[in-house]
Image 1 (cartoon, one colour):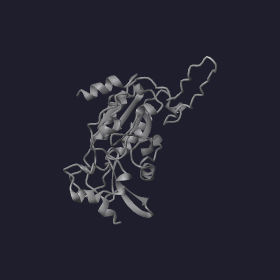
Image 2: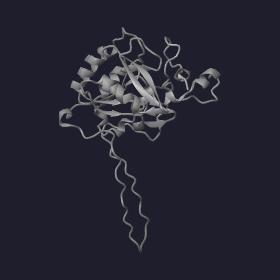
Image 3: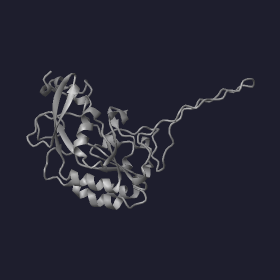
Image 4: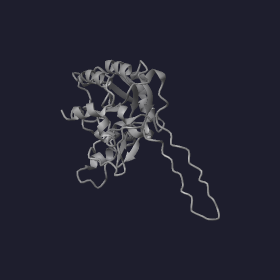
Length: 277
């Protein structure tokens, strides 16, 4: 299959054809053209961004400033006067992140998105691409052209000094891992989380911060997609989606804010003020 035939449009108005990271919309949606339906492809499974920002938080979801215990499903023994049943507890669910290192002790955890936050990737050739990453799909190797967002190097280096930084993307590891290798030359990311670490909720891959194994009052997520942090909007620092504007300065402009946030006891008050601006 010609890879160009499976590149679909996303929200970037400057490109006629760029890689779509969206989930396939329902076939019954009236405003989906026949051409777009034909362009759906396996490439969309490698990348992810979100259009559905009006995702409702599950009623059972609660936001806590303390570290939640691992999930255990212990059966309740039936009552019996004759036989005593001793339940055997299931092993606790594992957290997504390893134990905090001594070097990061006392630091807040910043979860950073990849696509349209730090970089923009496309299967369409880009003359000024910073990286070209080969990705194998169905036995064929395709080239992914990657642009770095302006000031991303300075941003990552400084964030690595201030926080425990974690890369968390809804894209597949076979694409995102080699991109992260090229992007993060300083070992800023203490861990990398990919699509399998997300929770699939109402058509979106959501990054459930309660599964990280860190106190939520000390966790921040930096992401261009509100749908990705719908479970914990109080922990988010939203950024604008980036495609190719080389005059963009958002990452650089955020550094003074993060320098101040790194000194706070908890994140909620500061982030609430940010949302209120």
